[in-house]
Image (cartoon, rainbow, N blue to C red; front, side, top):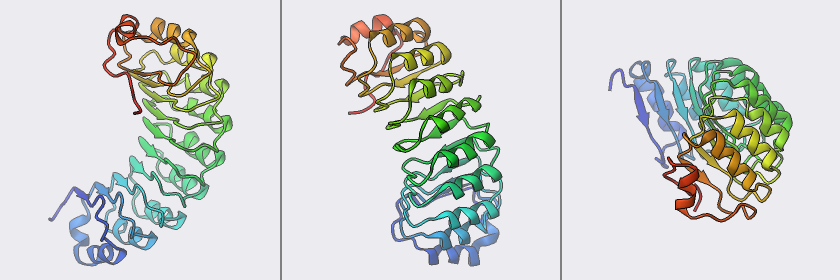
Length: 274
């Protein structure tokens, strides 16, 4: 496996730190060209294992360690020390990471294009702002189920001029003012606002007018939006929207698929959440 480019150990639940240490000791020369490492669901791996494997992968570009509750800020400190060239980082479900990790990421990976911190519940506004202010090349940002964040952080999303994918599902503190700042991301193509309960027509209309390249929009469960939002979207995004979920929006007139297709002729999906 000399010059391997990718290793996928996703949900290899018997993999432990000792196995990664063995790779470091026995195969380090074979890992120097590694660019993609997937450790998703490897729940027996800790900071020690991350230090071992990343020390052998200086050219890593994509690192994913979804659903790992053992990794802490110490593991991210080892990661940024060993791997300086990451552009895609998935830390979804790593609930023991804090703002310290966000600062380390922001200081090291200013070329970062994709970041997933779903359910990293210790991250605060300050931690997210570290990233938003320094990682201006981000194209994909997943903030799913981070209900403690506020507009103080969301407003800084406006700094991401290259952003195309944004997941704010469950952003309970996101207001229309915060959403108006998100609307400054003119290249946004996918936006998940599911259960963003404070949002109203005002916020959605700002998105419709600012993000005219939208292909996916979920408003699932938002009771504060009405037909005014649908009208604004039809006016500005009818030629691009392919997925629109307004299920649970009780103040939007119930329409058949044919009715929605009259407004949005390119729709192919009417439900994001089952």
